Image (cartoon, rainbow, N blue to C red; front, top):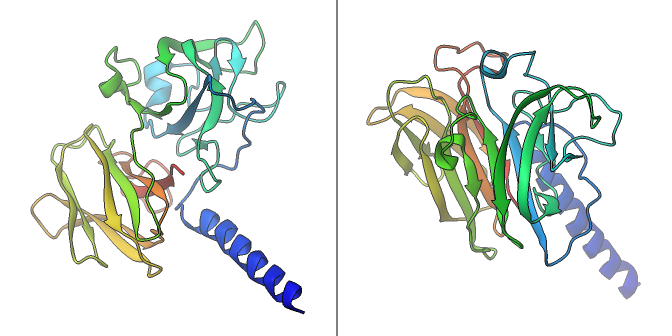
Length: 270
């Protein structure tokens, strides 16, 4: 009987972890990790598509595409499937033990391609990066993807320190590039502004915040005012976790069901 109680406790904890992963994200695209073995020479990368006008910038119906690293398809399921990255998509799915795909370290040509991993795939765009072993990266795909500057392109090296049960990490990124003014983020649970005066295109590095099992409501406001631009309800910000909070979309679009509207999204890094 004692063994059965112990098993039930472990099962309940495991179930809670899985449920937390699925509820902690406002939206994401259910994609599958590539089967790359983990080693000390591996790097780790996450792709998030928040580009509003990729069709115009890259052409050829670029709102749906695959990502290849040195000619090897990194996104999606297996070779031969349809393209998978779309506006609002994240790869790999957040909420797993790590929101990163495992890729080889070293020099990489990152290629956006139509079709699948074939020699005749239509290339939309490519650029080169060097990935350090045992390091974590996020490529936040925005309308500035063609910039030669990694900060503007939002190819980010993710530097954060693991937390304990009392705290979580979170950074904030403003990707509403056609906006004309800064924003604040207000936490209802903490009753204070947690990110202030963040300009379009700015990245605020990871910071630690007090964790709680009580959900939070996060308000994205015009800087220095109480004017709400969007509200993220029931944000679950538990200990041990690391999050990226993104204000994304089109500043001129507030349509409730349009994925390209300006809105807050919470992504899990790990």
